[in-house]
Every structure is written in structure tokens, then in C-alpha cells.
Length: 80
Image 1: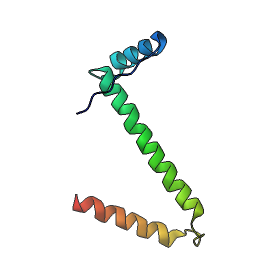
Image 2 (image 1 turned 90 degrees about the horizontal axis):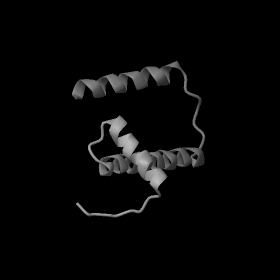
Image 3 (image 1 turned 120 degrees about the vertical axis):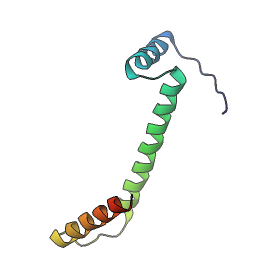
Image 4 (image 1 turned 90 degrees about the vertical axis):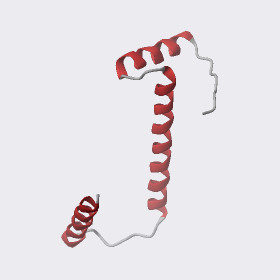
């Protein structure tokens, strides 16, 4: 694992320390890694949403669509 040192103003450092103590993180590094992972997920979701907005319009989803979707979810759960 690589190391990265960051400088924080005292107020931010105190905030991180509080979050570590409250949130069950072992170290400030664990807390920061979690923030980075969440930001990566947010960016991925944003990209997917923008991709969806740019795609061609589909037919409205009706009862048959949702029934098929529930079937796929149920089948996926059975495989796990």
C-alpha cells in the first residue's frame, strides 16, 4: 500500500478525529479511505445517470416490465 501525507487545518483534523472516534474507524486513514470510496461510487453513479440521460428514450415501464425485473432479481438471489 502506498503512503500519502496530507496537511489539514486544525479544525478539519479535529473533525476527522471525531469521526474516527464516533464512526468505529480504527484510524484516520480508514476514515479517509472510506470517504474516497464513497466519492468514487458517487462519481460512477453520476456517470451512469448522465449516460442514461444521453441515451435514447425507451418505452414507459409497465407492469410486465416490473414483473420481469422482480423475476431477474429473484433468480439472481437464488444463484448466490
